[in-house]
Length: 160
Image (cartoon, rainbow, N blue to C red; front, top):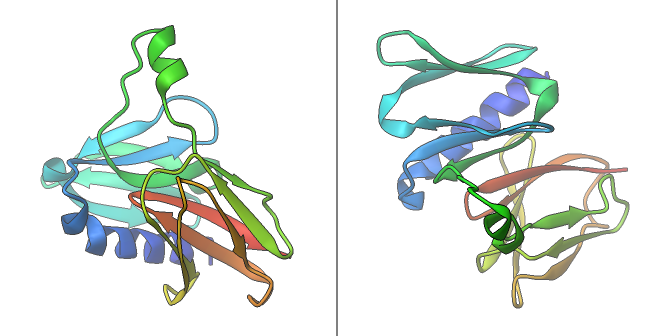
């Protein structure tokens, strides 16, 4: 079931990728460095119950990630932090609490709109950000897992 959800998320993101005008698919794990693959080199993505595989046009494995270890999948430019000044100046977007019951707080987000999708890819809610911050009322949503899309970043959250 988890692989179907991730495949659906990837399909939504892949469909939106021409709108992003970015050049890489970036997989950010829960810990460690992000994995970036140039969109021009990606032939296809395979999702299994345990892993996400990115293959080239010639069927060469470009990257692999365990589904349980993926924090975000996004399109963009890989971040190359070269020193402490880069780390301090990098914008850190926070989405909390997760899991939540009635509200979701977004801080330090770049962009103007936030979209919330259910796991089946249906758009349920949109919100405008004021200065990169917002508090979203998610109390009307049924219990379950949701995807929050902001620019090219996707965050999975749980309503309980």
